[in-house]
Image 1 (cartoon, rainbow, N blue to C red):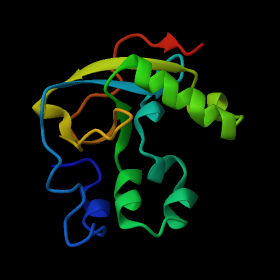
Image 2: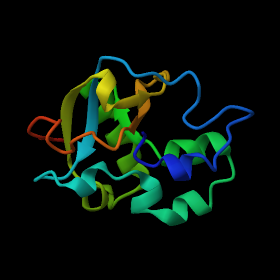
Image 3: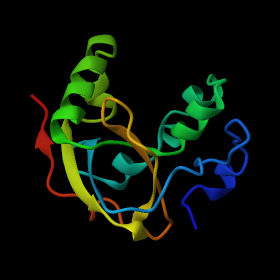
Image 4: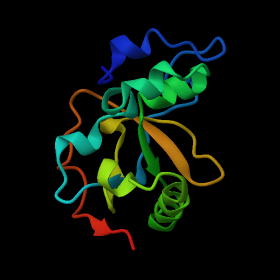
Length: 142
């Protein structure tokens, strides 16, 4: 069962469920922004960490994404996305962290959406997924 299954049941994405039917349980590398040291809080979706953002979101695709854990395919893509966001959100390092960490996701960890053109995807974890133990020691973002 997915970690936020009850909440996900309330989100319909253009006739599809949340997460979308294209999401799958696969083996893949994942990079995530974290604080040092990593805590359970680093692995809460934005809908939990910042409920206002979810409430202000009208697009069901973005609402669904708010319940997933934002990740990237590569370290370089993750750092580039962080630096881009930092231009608009000056306090991002205090809010979500200033490091990246890597994990090798397996089918037992959850459902991953397809990566976008920037290597971003969402992981909708299963309740049994052990965070932060799954992730390696964080590396500071320059």
